[in-house]
Image (cartoon, rainbow, N blue to C red):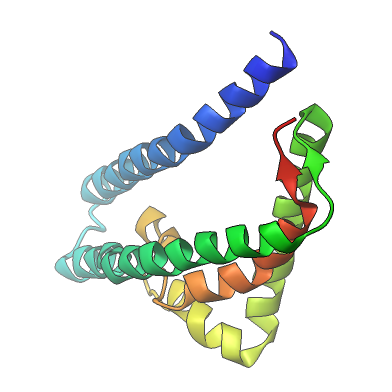
Length: 161
């Protein structure tokens, strides 16, 4: 597989990976609920807590849509003012992947240490029932914090060569 096809495959997978994460999350949640039924730990309270965790996704995705829509516009605007451009190849794709992972680590560390950011993230840690649904428990402000931390990655200024 040549480099151009490989990069197109990575771009294609980046869109479908998110869908597969949701499929497996629901699969694992279903398995967890079945386990709770068979071990007789299932209760109305546990079900409502799980449902509560799942329902935090509704306002989160609305906010994510609005914030990331604005962020994409902001990123493209900033991109136009950057005087340097990096070619997209296997090396820069790997570098961006590593920097995005590092950025996420720094973001997660900061939201646990900085009180204003903890305000947005504490919803994720507020459940009394810990299962797959709890992992996807987010607040309205998580996308705002994420955009702030990922903005410096735009300075990489990747371009198709």
